[in-house]
Length: 110
Length: 114
Image (cartoon, rainbow over all chains, first blue to last red; front, side, top):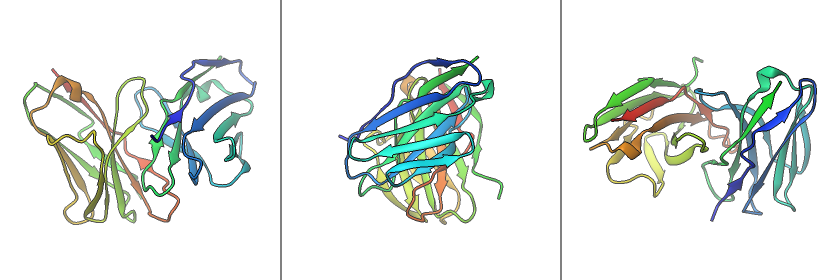
């Protein structure tokens, strides 16, 4: 069974703090991992992709991947109220051509 | 590049009616995906096309659902004999098929079945 697990939240952080969002997945052979941001009533927007172990930084966002432990995380530095949204983790499972999404974690920055 | 376009944005229908949605992908993308999303859930895969070929369908896609991409450009998703459980956001996404499976989503069609 291909599963992507996320804590639904909400995760509340004060403005300026670091928000840490986590995701685990079921297939050790998975190769591609993505984070999407979704504002209420809107469609998902791709913000980060990561394919190899370690960290990948893009502005205030850092994606971290640990394939041995089967988790991927997203750090948001200097969190802003505009970061308040649901963050979806998506995995391209080994051998597949589609993405499987978690249920998302709601982030509230105030 | 105008992004992925979906039409209509909203659709209200009565149970038992047929509905059809349209998706225009990013022009250079040859993969097109349909997902469905309900409140509090992540997008669930329905089906995808590589050019005009429908390569994969989810078990979620009952025989009341049919999707086409006749010329490898735009796609349609039809739901026949709609049920209240079909109420959801229907999302279309496209991908450049470069092996990295990045999906770019349209604004979605919100379906309400009364």
